[in-house]
Image (cartoon, rainbow, N blue to C red):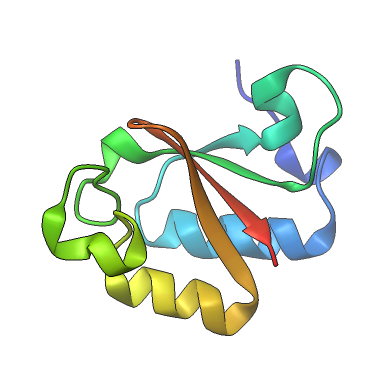
Length: 95
């Protein structure tokens, strides 16, 4: 089922989704869609699809908690942060 995220997100999240998808990152939906009820604003990402950007077990990325350091720095500059749900699911929130 294809979800039209533009109907469920505010404009900054639509731009964020567009940027992440341009990098080949699989944005699955919003955090509210992940939980099945209204939750905080942010995006739900399948981390297991892009190990070059997200690797829960990567010991070289400990300072960025398993997120590619360049992507982590970009997110921080833009006012976002990543948070793991589990080893295959990561969220990005506005800080």
